[in-house]
Image (tube, rainbow, N blue to C red):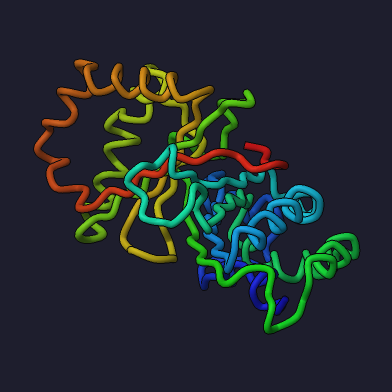
Amino acid sequence: MERRALLTGAATAAGVGVLGASAGAQERSTGGKQVLELRRYTFASPEKREAFEKFLASGMIPALNRVGIRPVGAFRMTKADNPQATFAGEVSPDLYLLLPHASAPSAVMLDTNLAKDSAFTQALAGIGEAPKDPAFSRYESSLLLAFDHCPKVEVPAKGSNRVLQLRIYEAMNEERCRMKVHMFNEGGEIRLFRETGMNPVFFGHALSGTRLPNLTYMLGFENDEALKTAWDKFRKHPDWLKLSKDPKYKDTVSQITNLVLRPTAGSQI
């Protein structure tokens, strides 16, 4: 496998500018909020995806923990949970990986730090490095800044039947995107989520990636029924009915992507 594919993290100019700062100063530069990297891996075959899931559990997630990235989330998507999905087969050819960084330099230096980890490089060699037969086809990466009212990744559900809901809200422009962030924070939507059982894993405003501008968030539930019950409760809540009609939040979302995911073996979320 080509090392460009696995070891290269999402590096941004914002992170480069504070590389020389102390760890405390780096975290203060983001107001104590995590920088979140969300990756989507694609694979040439189900067998490739299954092999990579095993590598995540045995090699990559432990290595990420050793360089200070935790909890790491790894997720797959099935047709049963997403009946409108267009992929062939019962399981999507994609895997999603969530990497919480304490600061932007952590994301910038991920390549370098993993390359120094001998246990990781040995595990990497075990899944094949042939350029014409890579472990995965490609991955996309988005870098997100966590919200004020959800500054760090949370782990709200731990049961074996837990489900994660990943939602991406695209906006027509940055001003409308910022206003939707405001709606979640100062407007009280995150508070209302918590009160109705819509348990945050993370909320992030995209700094780089695809389909910009957007904000992305994930919710965690113990099972399918808990997901349905919480959404029903939220939609009917009088505070939401009032907030959703506030004119300053009009037209803040132009497109919504909604995915229901399941944790893979080794996922810490």
